[in-house]
Amino acid sequence: MPRRLDRLLLETSAAAPLVIAQRLSRMAAAGSAPSQRDRREFRRMSDEKVAAFYGSWAAMWSQAIANQVALAQSMWLAPWRLSSPHASSARQHRDAQRILTAGIVPIHRTAVANARRLTRVAKKKR
Image 1 (cartoon, helix red, strand yellow):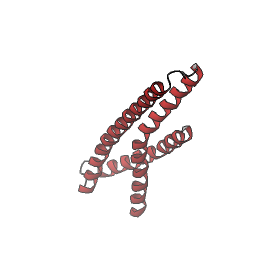
Image 2 (tube, helix red, strand yellow):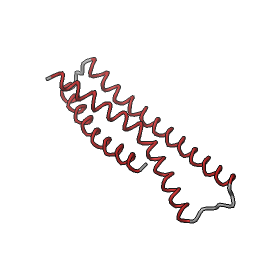
Image 3 (tube, one colour):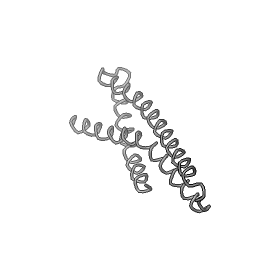
Image 4 (cartoon, one colour):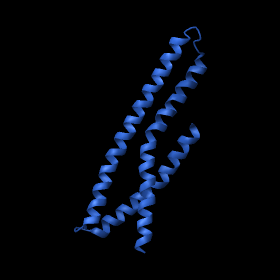
């Protein structure tokens, strides 16, 4: 789990500056009279941020609920097997990583897809 979270964060942190640079360049080139294509891209930029935020929020809530259900089931099915403080801390750490991973996935998906798409479009213009 930590490796996946690390990979997602690394890829997102690499893709985001590329997307920002491409879009800022496009805004600067468009100036005060953006084309229809530019306006579509700028609209897409804001729409996808909202969608990624809501997707991230929903994924984190879903994972948090799943963690709580799993904890409740383990306590209900085996109440005599209360875990040690160390095991409890490890479980909380693992659950937090699951929540963070679930939350970064929609943002990662959007950032990486945009980096691919925008660099492909930039290469075609050359």
